[in-house]
Image 1 (cartoon, rainbow, N blue to C red):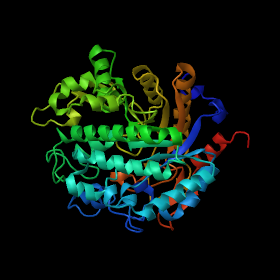
Image 2: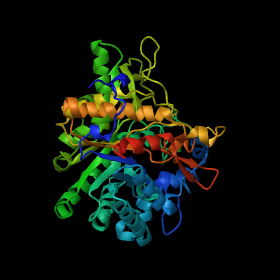
Image 3: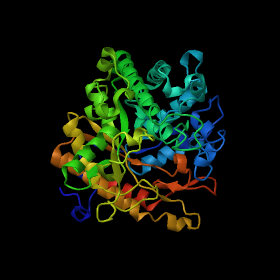
Image 4: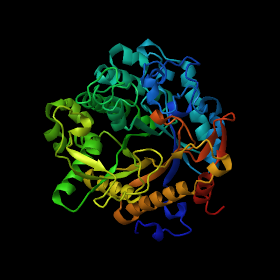
Length: 495
């Protein structure tokens, strides 16, 4: 199977995939739930980040927040029915740590109202014939733990995270069979501790003068280390206490770009591999082999924290599946101009990432998000690479999608005509199928991001990723876009 649009059959639909291939949509708690301070929920770092920090508030492009978001908390039944009615057979959502444990520490008390909310969500998901895929943590650290010891900057987080995860296994594991420990740890360590663009907004002052504190050269690696140890600790407790009786699987979701060498020169080819090691291998190598990539070790040195023998054993092969989250690709070339006085995580690779080739041509059309260029073949290359480098693990594409500007001058009727999104999904699913059929990649499912428009972190509500349009001016009404109608036909070819 080739990867170009011209090769895609006009009748391309879910019947091209194996019968047991899972199709779902994905969401996350802070982005959709709302109900930020009711029913016993404690604040998360995102509640604080969008409200209280001087200056940092304005890092959110439209100065918005997730206080109400799209009110999934009160509309979850309608939303889950919409997912079902499109023909999906899985629904991915995350649990808010501070909704179930307001202080972040299980030993200080559980919020049973929060537990009951997620019981209702899980039960409704199953009632509608959908498989719940549950993300344990999607960036919303309890503010209490940030205040107490600095959140993921402290090794204390490992115990508190493990005990939180264990609570979820105990209360929900009889029904939840797919767990993901973390969503995109690269984004948390990088955007929150190198750029300062995500909560809790830490970085070196020269990187972003709105950061109140931080060190972009060291903190991303400390956070990465504690994320990895938290993951392996939760996986260990699940496998030890729950997996045999609950018959579930546990993994993690990882976000990465695909990197093409800027030319066929050896230096550019090496640069593309190094870029992957820093963005993807930083996580996959420890999770698979129990150690950081040699390339990263050589370039970063003692800024990488070392693993003990016991930690290495717990990390090695600490997943039943990997969730890959792919959106975009870049070219890579060596960067010989790193300023020694301005060192940070994103300069340590000595790589320049660019969307432009030597002729000034973009690698693909730009979406709305400033980092986002459309390159469908990248998902196939990433899947094939993951098979080759990491022993052909079970993979789910846990996020893939494209955004556009929330254009308030546009009528709703026009906003629903998102043929560009249909084109994006067709090409990326076709390339996913190519990896499965041509290269025998062990890819088992595909989740569209997102079911509906929502709060997109530092760009707020200016971006729309949804299959469903949310009318922010009219009671958050949900309206199916053309892409939702297309998915309904794609997933129900005989109807």
